[in-house]
Length: 147
Image 1 (cartoon, rainbow, N blue to C red):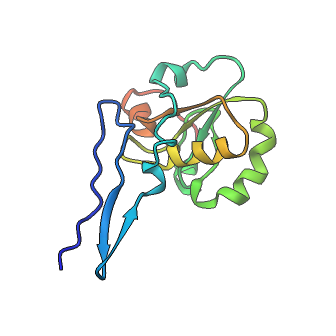
Image 2: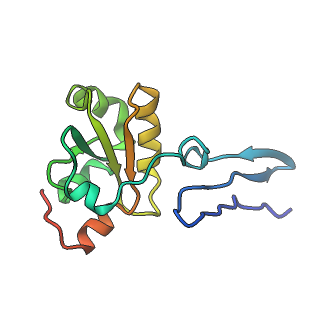
């Protein structure tokens, strides 16, 4: 039996993904990774300038693992690693309260920023943007970093 792997198609903005059908042991199920859900693909995209010069009341949130954040991050970014969300959220939620939030992770290939934005939306945040190009573009632009 051949098992078709999830098929993912991105449009020009790299924001829309399609769910795929996987057949596992003869039973077909719909495989829709969390980041492929349409509601997660509908976050406005922040550009490099939005992150480099954020408007007043904006918080930058790093969705990468704590070890990557410690190695280098966008100045002033708050660490909220997706892989330890519940613990980290309880520590930073007060600092994020009432803020416009721009979430980033490693690059366009990293979906953690979309998933994290979805989790923040579920907890009541409405003004959410995603810097899809992420840390990779920030570093490539030669912009300042913090450790």
